[in-house]
Length: 111
Length: 116
Image (cartoon, rainbow over all chains, first blue to last red; front, side, top):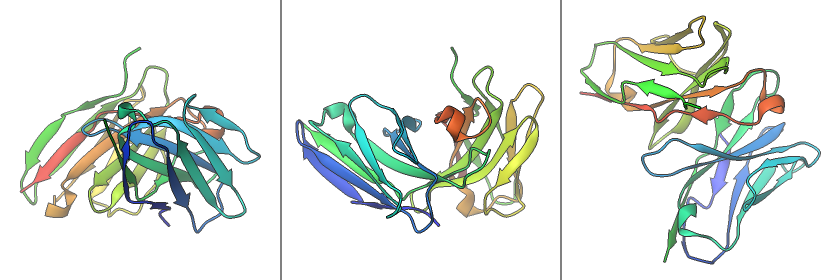
């Protein structure tokens, strides 16, 4: 089952904050976040592991609620460079690199 | 360090034809995954190869196939193309055995396939 992201799209002014949510109907081993700018490849932002370990981006934070099978990405003091589509990804577990990506959230930051 | 390279970047085919897409992973990476990206379905997992073996497969028909060579380069093939196969096909590489070790997929810029 594909994780569901909300909102589908959000428009911000520079300096404003945004929260992107990712919800799964399955138990989560970890949550991965990627950003894809228009016409470019998706780029890794961070991974959140069970137990609270987080690896990744210095300026973007996220939370992972294992019990609720949810994750949220926090974009504070947004910059123009934050514009793009954000995807969360969940893994099946085990020694494979299969990710099930969420529905995506389009973020547009305006001057 | 060179990134993931996909060829061709753009191609146009007609229904019924077949297509082969190529992916060269980052040097030293042994895992290659393929994803299909469309506006309606988003990023959908196709398959993953590790050390020349298919380790996982998504829910796509048998017309979609792939392989990995001993140098970790990978190809995917779509036979009997349908209009719905029009998409951006993304390849991603990673060092190896599962996310707990690596945490990151490195994506190529994709091959955009248009089926007429």
